[in-house]
Length: 108
Image 1 (cartoon, rainbow, N blue to C red):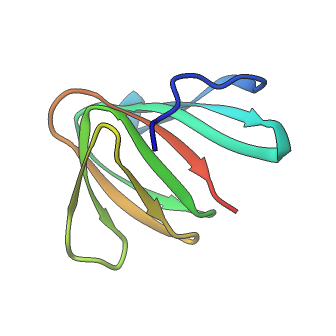
Image 2 (image 1 turned 30 degrees about the horizontal axis):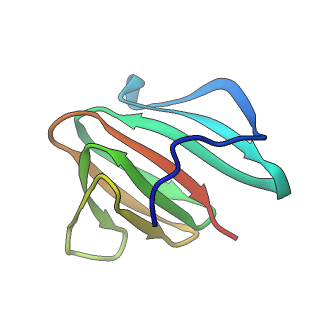
């Protein structure tokens, strides 16, 4: 499934979500039907995120390595791939090279 290059008919929250002293930054999109996504950048480093809702992280540029909470194996993700994170869980993401860009979709 190809990654979207644009979203139409959305509301953009202009206040950025800034994490880890600006090393991870995203903006929230509100879509029709109460769907919510964030679009963001992750600078090189290793970061841990907790989740309330289930999420799908689609990598739109760059690459990363991810370890889901409760697992010992690390999985690599490149541009055009995605990973899902269960609700009430978390993941550690490592970006080693160029900035990693992503779309995070909050799943029902």
